[in-house]
Length: 396
Length: 226
Image (cartoon, rainbow over all chains, first blue to last red; front, side, top):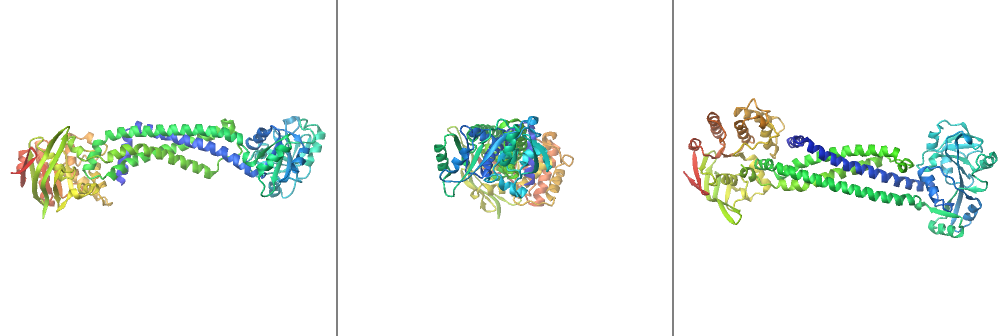
């Protein structure tokens, strides 16, 4: 076996340019696989996690603000939109609604109002909240007092709030930042959270001019056990024309639609790359088979079984596949990281790939690249292994 | 017990619409350790007969018995084992693999053997055989670095690598000068007498043919004892 392996390596070195072309083709295929699967997994994961972590069945937003709400929750964008606070009570009265809690989204505008860079400040109702409080209790072990704030994980990093108990000016009021929350993987990681009871002081300061008193941005709704959220959503929209609703499963619907188109493009590109790689391997191994027909005849004549010929070529193919796929995985991973910094849709995603996801993507790409290489070479090699040993005598 | 029995062996080829009888009803009994020569004109069927005995091509009719077993009852893998472990081939040209050194070419049949030793004895045997054919200084040379005669000698050494019971040689000394031809002849006779290896040699060389203990002539596919 060792001799066959070393023979295979010698064969690969025989025509280095040809071997390099094959390795390059497989590397391209594997890198395309890594890049596209990483992209789609990341966007999908971000949407799924956001929906799971919000803890609400429905999100009620002002009419036509669905897109903006998704951008806040999924893409970490800084947006503000408002509706009348009275609508929250009307939502609470809808049949099937269990809990409702509202939030106000405020945008800091740097030194004009605040001592932190531009960020989203979310005022939440501590009496009714079921979105932020679970994290807050876990982290701070108590509700926020008036004049206190906590920062989301990313926000804390951005505004260097790794240090707690620092005072910051927010909308003309001094807030003591008493801690930061763990990473949630949602757009909320980039916000600073304060209690709703601070809003009177903020309104009084006049520094949050675009937020009129008596307005809120969103209301999160939990439906009663056993009630279908989509039916409750339909009831809310039918009864209150000033609002739109987003079901948990609908979060990211627009992005998913775009993503599906992108996935189709990626799939087609990968399919084309796979077909091209297959035919390249097939063509090159057909040429190799013709070139080495006499050598195979010699080997068959001196005792090689069909399986020996198969092993010999399969080792060559596997070496090309393994090296190509490994290089492709490295290149694809580098490309994925690079696009995080350049593609705005990826840059704004709130979640990154986990180690297990990265490993799975690498394994799938590795298998994909290697399999195409093996399949491409299989036909020519199968023809070759059946070669009559007599050929060597007749060709003399 | 006879070593090889060739029984009414025929091989026909179809070329376009014509049927060509390369070997026609050949029969022979060869005892173990015999040195057999076959002479004949080009195209008389000598090479085809050799390939039939070597299990490289299916006969149209007849049988080849090796140690009383019909080799054409075996499947492809068993025939490969027969060619690898029982038979040593010397083809009309050296037929070496160009990317392997002389020693690696000798070790190639070892790689195809069903049981191989890992104690380095195969490597030592390859080196010894190369020394025996006068190529002790060319052990790690590639075929392209060897003359035609040297390549031929590597192929001769390779045929003995797996200690075969039967050597099938097709014009084995064709490319060699007179001195080397004589040296190889002596080498064959020594292997024949020391190891009781059976030789079936196709040759145009009348001197070589005359030294065989059993002699045949092929004429138009027919095998005749001389």
